[in-house]
Length: 518
Image 1 (cartoon, rainbow, N blue to C red):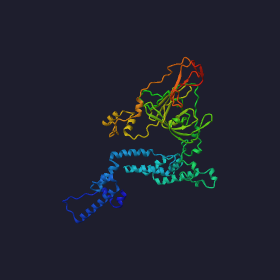
Image 2 (image 1 turned 90 degrees about the horizontal axis):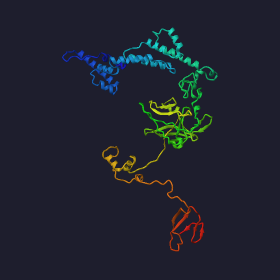
Image 3 (image 1 turned 120 degrees about the horizontal axis):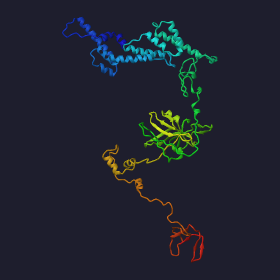
Image 4 (image 1 turned 135 degrees about the vertical axis):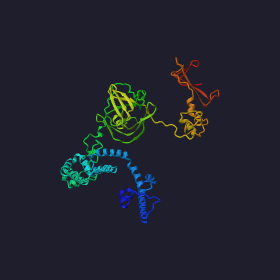
């Protein structure tokens, strides 16, 4: 802004200002003309300041009577008073001293960072000499520039050396170092190493797999990609160490302990099915489950194989989310669980839990699992076979009412079949949002009627026991049957003997193996 005002010959009027003459003071024609010219320059400078600030800055200088007053207001607003400037300078000094060149940073980028902080110090009233900037750059370079830094310090006078000259020397050394690095076995090729261009970063002197701007997603280090990583690939570590339990024992219970910590724990039920047992495994790479009905959300895809300790493999048929009931009544979920139909035991991967920010502590035969906020999730005791297992109360999908057009019935279902009188009371007292204006007339609810029916239980055994032959007879009324009997009846009673297939009529002296119709 000073440059703009100086180019228009207005900086003197902004910096020094001018004083209006008194009303009763007599002035000559030349003085009046000079005063008018000064006023025009002041208003022109004020106009430039108006155009240079945003809306919030304009509100600060809108009432300024002169350009000098407006400049002072902006100076205090942006630079602060003396105490604020001292605090800001203290911060900038610490930032300047802590600057250090990074390994993958270029010389030009680092010098720009140093000059930026130095310029900020100068704008706040502490100009930084060029010699001090040069000394700071030389002592904060990486080890690759140690030799050239020693040469510059010995051969040149740092008090007169400019930052531009230093930057030129360092950039020349940087280019030579890149050319030397590109030489070697690749020099036998048709293209010189100095002309090789990396398609990753666009620079010369190295190939893409040697590019330091790329990091390996397997080990996390720079200078190579996962294809050429010497560290064992993570995909090869998908083995689990699951021992067969030698005896039938109760699963470990994930329980809540009373302490000052905040707990987030799941509820375990000893009456759960056997396949709801989950093994806490530090050698498994992913959560795995073989029961399809446990998944609330399941995406069936072919996701590869899972390798076991005996070099056997089973196919992964999908992945999804499993929900379970916590002890506080809330619903918890386990995400990204592999669906492996051939797996007979469910596995919780400790490594996958730790990737989510959880922590695992094994101490005194007890495993403690905590979340990233240090809240206890699980406390599981080790079994005799040195394993940690627990049972989760798995929640399976249930389909309730999908479409209810009557709004009163909908609220009746939402409140767990609350009576309509209670719903009307809630609406009248405005205790629940959304009930206002809903008419709760008495309606018929089939579920409520069936739920209130009284019934007697069935007997565990028959009330009458057969003690002799022909003691238990089953009769059924059947008909109409054609032709009718001699008495004219078409409905007849069918008698079947459960204990003897032969019916004896003593007075007729007839033996028949067939059922008898009366």
